[in-house]
Image 1 (tube, rainbow, N blue to C red):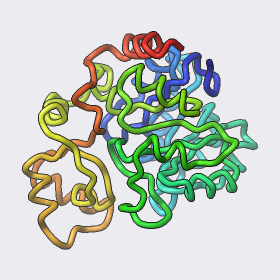
Image 2: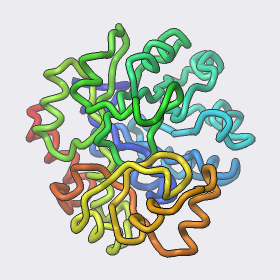
Image 3: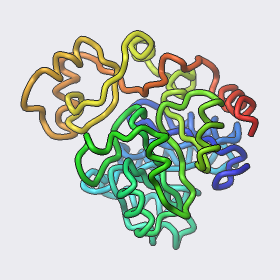
Image 4: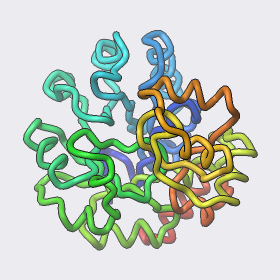
Length: 287
């Protein structure tokens, strides 16, 4: 069972400001679809990241961007010039036609059935269904963040589309992958599971916080709703009124101390090399 050229229907979620580009290459070489977290990179950095991954793998990989108004100047031009196999978009939509005309498949994130229908009408190639369990920022772009906190299985059941659907949120093992495939998803996207790989280079304090604390969705960390470890510092920030807009609140939070994003499956995540993790997931899910 392949997914956009990858041997396995396993997508490594892009993790901005956390993962190196090299993680994408390792995952792609192992048979998954690796992702470059390109949304926060300057054009020259994005170009270099794509070149690095392309030099390290013959497998397909994705480049992730934020939709406007958070899209960095020059990012679209770099992607169109470099032509990675896949581009994924979060926080809304970028016109997919230029990418598709360049031979680049377009994935976009939906947190509700309404968002999925909007993305399909826009002409994307696949929809990433981001369940409430997912770590990191919510991709919500229509309606309220609270209404868009839909558990993954409920979200999958609500989306009516002929497009491939990638299930994301709380999946850290092969049983989770097999479950969403049985529910009709074409692939599973995992982020938190790859946080725990040495290739990601995640700080030990980050991993320990995700092991120790439950997670919560809040805008108090960055100014935009995201799921992170419910540390005492995050509790303090959540209790304070008047959070700054995204991304200014992140800088304010950073002055107070470190905070750690992650999904609900963090306490079950395994610390394995990324290639071994992909192969283990594939074996467990009988892919």
